[in-house]
Image (cartoon, rainbow, N blue to C red; front, side, top):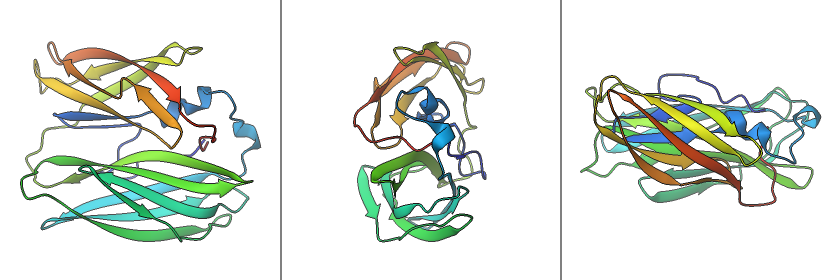
Length: 219
């Protein structure tokens, strides 16, 4: 399974949240989906992201490392930020124990402030199959943003891919948050978005993982 774990203060794994929005990153449970053989995988990508804000620009620095023993071909990156999509291709391949680095600049609307999620999908080619992994970086436009929320996922019904999300947000008390699902290509969540009310800083939500394509999720 790809090791997109917590690398710095700008990227939180497996969940990244703010007071007003919670981004569901479910890479840790993708191995439950049929058709994936982690033992046979010879490519293991680790993606490190650093997001900074300079003026009206969000700047991403990505380092993608191949910890496997086979070359990951045709690396591509998809970015979704504030409703705008960006695709970066032509990055070539990454050999075993090698990495590539790239920088991406994104415009921040002048009327948007706080902790802003940047949805990232990294994909590559292996044995004729396109594989991908999803992660989220946070661009913070001010220093007074609310503290992060603790989200914990647990399987309710593995066969039907149903999961329960426990939300702990003591600082918010009885406020509300919005959950937004984000995953690799070929994976979607139902519901894709839901608003949850907190009672004494706690709440629970349920969601289902849905394969939307035949391509294999990166492990």
